[in-house]
Image (cartoon, rainbow, N blue to C red; front, side, top):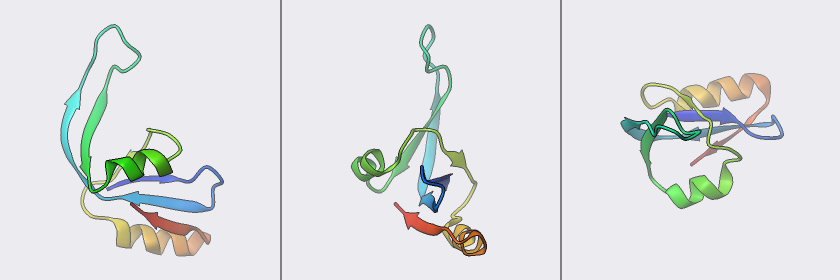
Length: 78
């Protein structure tokens, strides 16, 4: 599960997917990156404000909903 706070700090974004690989590109700003297979990559690129995410092992959307309720965040599942 990928997660991050929304840009206005009032939403918690949950993205379930599968980590398929890590990649490195020498002589670029992209030195380390995770390749993640998600259900709708186009929606992910449209709705997430940046490409930096926290990676949580396992399917954690339900856990994120509990955490979000404590802080009054809305959960957006992609």
